[in-house]
Length: 339
Image 1: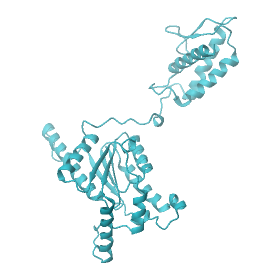
Image 2 (image 1 turned 120 degrees about the vertical axis):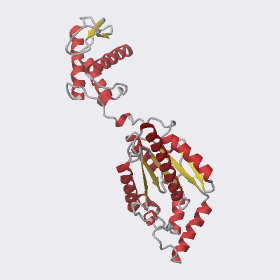
Image 3 (image 1 turned 30 degrees about the horizontal axis):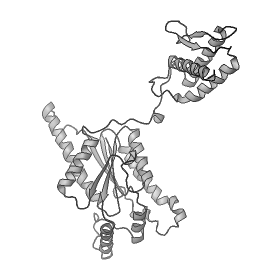
Image 4 (image 1 turned 45 degrees about the vertical axis):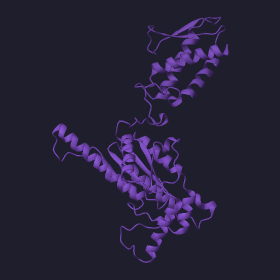
């Protein structure tokens, strides 16, 4: 199930909205389970379809001081080890539980677009959607909330374990300065949902309903991994590169042996090295005789293009017959373009 990335300014109400979202999702999941039980006469103890995980700095005991770069020179901020370690801990926690049965709510700043892109890629790798919930809040209001928390801490009024923690003033200002707002035009920030500080219960439910439809309802899209990350098929008779080399060599040999002294004409190529002329492939030779150096050059160029299956993404299994078909087509195109 999906990854829900919550993003917003520090002390803008992200954790409050995350708790509301968790309550809403649990309610929707329970409703779905009750409906299934009535339909299938299952026992009340049947496991729910989805599980919910809320991951945050607080759940991983990450102090807000790790984001404090107010005293670090500008040229050294990108190498802040404590912040990188914190993100690594969050990333590991998300990766451990992200699956098709788990809804993960990542409550945090998530203020760097590169970080959100990394999370988007992780969700895509396991073929589950990711969405961003942006919590909108005026800078002055968020600053006031942080100042109030700092005052309470100074008065030792927030000694309770669940009391929200404030940011040091310099840290808070720096985080606001570095905040990169989600952009719905980019694929890693889309779909983007937004709630602002003053949104009431009705508006909040509308947004949550839309979010649910995107991650678990009829509006959920099928997530396909990047083609570059998909392990390609291999021919049963051996390693792909070996088969690629073998089949192209066999075709070159056939062309050299079958062409006439003056060149030109057609050479029929069997669809498999085992022979058989039925439904054979045809190489259209140019007017002059094609020598071995020229064929070898074209063969090497073809191997360079198709190494690892590049250009054959639409083929489920890169087998010998498909390689032979592709190489014959490549030769015909080359002969035609070279005249």
